Length: 296
Image (cartoon, rainbow, N blue to C red; front, side, top):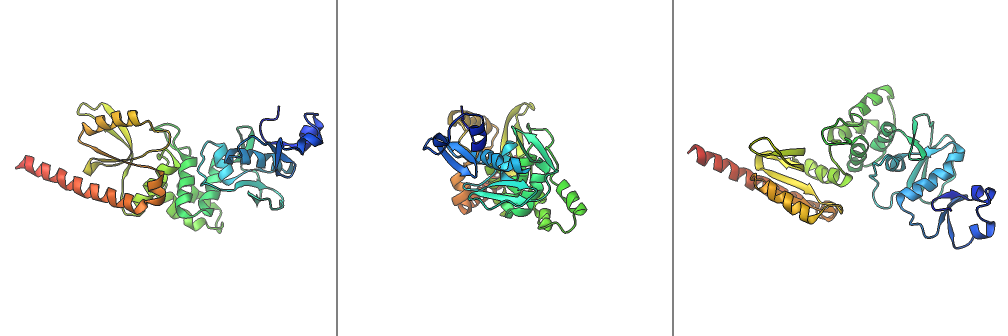
């Protein structure tokens, strides 16, 4: 049964369907000789798998955002084209960015071949606008579990630049690696953190809160310890009931939690920054006043 992207020529050769069925409304041609079942949603991952079906016979591999997705480091913005790397020139295809170059830095992952995590970070870090370049490097280097080391140190991208002097756009990696922090747990968390950092804040990342006995209470996305302020990104996977229970435990330590969603990061960034700035200022002043009163 054909349930994912497939090459039409392979399906015909194997006798899985006829040319008439292949050309029917049951299937959609997405790239030359590559088809999808008509009822399959063409998500970024599905389109990347289709792109691999297209380039694999030509010695190509997944690259860029498509390679990142293959590693489970999805960070592409909505509407991003899928990306491949091939040793020879490929004719332009709608929705596909084809890079030409050597395919020696590749690895097998999830049934496809893709540029390595490090090579993918090298490519995206040089080609994307600054915020999205940082998002990509964070995603690819992200620590597998809290407290573990990153999959690679972003600063090693600068070591590669020293070896490949003159590589296109490599000078911009200085700012990318300084802003990168693989402890960020999602692309949107990185985007939220960057909005605050570029506004002049220096929050702690994945900060652990403990009680008076040293017991673990919670780990927050971003923290301003001097203000006892936690800043959290609320994605679709968050559970309101669990979040409320967690916020109560955090509040018992004298901390306040601010929560933001995608709409705040994308469309209300200035208001988000202003709200955080106000809370940091007011709570810091309050804590200082409390300490002075105790010394009184």
